[in-house]
Length: 432
Image (cartoon, rainbow, N blue to C red; front, side, top):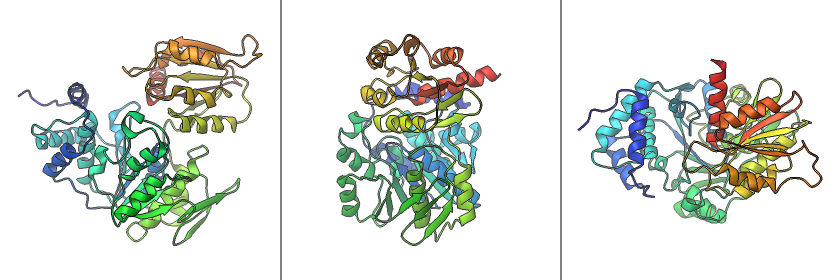
């Protein structure tokens, strides 16, 4: 048997090489078996968050409010942009290489001859790390779906489903009803189950009822209202008035914030959060790559929008930003996405497209993307008002956009985590 890696990059390389040989088996038996051998259990409340869009924002708001309230918080969030360590946070700080390596070693020892995918292995490792850390609450973001996601081997005290839209159809189904059923798989009997989608699929409601979960629905059990200065939240047992808007920008953030506040209301006896701490948590929350507007001119926006619902929201948010002469897009997307429905809402806000290949075998071919986008050229567009250019990497596409943009223009980077991560890495290397 070869010795185990001693550095985090070597561990991740080993897991990736194994992953290529491990068939993705859509079941939890293997993960559950290793979890039991690890004796993985949480002695604090666990909040689990699933959904097509809004998961990361909801997790970040929960973390921020709970940290402001003085609690020790463990967070598992994904994917990462630059460093794997971003996926595991303890008290607002990324986990160190050393504690992650220790957790990987623990999973490897418990695994025996059970094959695990990269995602299953790392999920167990981070859950083990959080469960053995001194924390008051754990927040776990679900990856794909819910019912069969590796995170779902853990029982949550409060489960949140943020939104249900069409994505990952090969695994989750091609209707909101099928996908809603998969997301509802994180609900537990007798525990709080929150759904902040304004139009929840009946399948989600039926599943929550059939297992005896305590279902909280937006508009029935909790709601929000706001004006231009502030907003308020009403739950089952109380109201929170005069709240600052979340620091995360965009049209759906009050839905996400309401889901977070509903979860905190459900846990108010164990984890009470004061009004001032709640306001501060929402005002100070940060999350890279979700309608993230960079400082300075020209305006630059990073957004991981990669499905129709997220793209429509991004287009709306860009439309609300005020006048910009031209908008340049750095755009790359995975081939298995509903590409036509992602670019359709963006066509009205983008003038110049810098289309890129992504560093993944699933990357859509940029030349084929360019052909699709060329058909969206507005009738009567003058020369110089519309263009589509193809690049081999997000860094090259971004460099081209930067070279052409003027102070009153803007750049929007979207289409995939890989697109945003590629631009983040390029910006980081240009600073050094």
